[in-house]
Image (cartoon, rainbow, N blue to C red; front, side, top):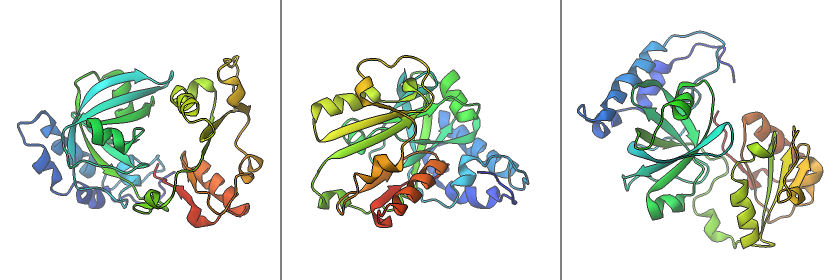
Length: 283
């Protein structure tokens, strides 16, 4: 998404940070520097006119955000692929919660740019163990670059949950019996199919209840035997999806905005009611 108009970050971002920083980060805290860096970011970018790609706080200035900002400590770092790291964070604040599909504002001491990353763990893991996980792709964007080049075990950051969940209804899952789950998952190649081992494990644990079709669009190496039965070359198509249309099917979409828009339009065109399509679009 490109910004073609004046960006009034100085007017919107302070509202997002309203009063919370001084309560959460006392000046003697290692995270107290966030007060300075966040507001330097606001004032330094208050009157920019350009066609640059909008930053996370600019893109999401009008999105819902929780008031709670919590400190978090890195307790695990693993490579999910050649370009993606999984960050495991210990959360001490019992008031910190989130819903599936939400993201976090990611505050890093000494880094003026605030990151925005999707949560890849379940709310249940946070409730049981006080752990939240993020999957972060390597880019030159300062927060992602920091995670891939400087972040270590015990690094301290701060988090705040946000997102407007389109179609989300509180408690909807409690009113529906668990049926079957069919996942269509597309990536450039098999090395970029994150969490594929976890998904295969779920398929084995719940045969007939959970199934997955992996799609790859630029596969150049040989596909391992374990994945071969589940791989389709090419993008997810109307033909793939139309066979699953029924009155009691809910559709959940996750991906970059062009993909979400394309699949939403495809589903609508083949007769899926809009109130059965769920997604969260923010970057």
